Image (cartoon, rainbow, N blue to C red; front, side, top):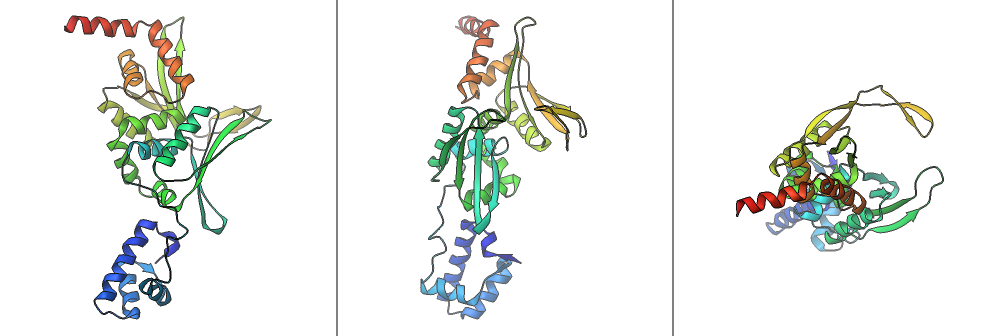
Length: 287
């Protein structure tokens, strides 16, 4: 049986409303407690039921509520979460979402998305001798934490409602632009250990007329050198690649990066390949 501390504020609000309704019908506190345990599989004390009904305790006094209805900002956050962002439960039931990145504009975009939802993130800059310095964004919010850690179906629904923003968040996190001037080869790719995440990206890209391909990039046990030390991949690492020039161009137009250096690199490569000229030519022919 679940405990109240394990529930999202939305779930607790639903239970509270049920408690009020049962009390208005004349049910005793003990009977209300038993009914809630049966209907919601949640352990709640008689004292808590009593305090709720008498209005002497508000579960949300210390909870910062956020808007979890599907939105462009939430879709972007989901994309970043499935990429670079991390979530953790610290002491005293602190539920933290954190992003540490090299690009300041990436951190700022993530911060703006959090604020648009009603969260109150903290930001800062971290110097590190062993690796590149990082910008960080951090927010403590149980409601958002429980949403991100919850069923993948809810994340997929948000991503599907706003595919461009979701994909931008994911490719901001994991995406890279590769351009070889000599061979005139250009592609955009992203790697992830979760094949389901890349499959979702593939489906959403297809909706935007962007062809992509998923393949196994590094198998479990493959050796890798990280800053002079040898390690092994603990799981299979998959990669999604957008390689057809028209699809790369469509990605630039429809999705793109909020990270300026990546977006600029992609634009310059497309210009060198004459993709913008070809677009103008097609437009002229259509007139």
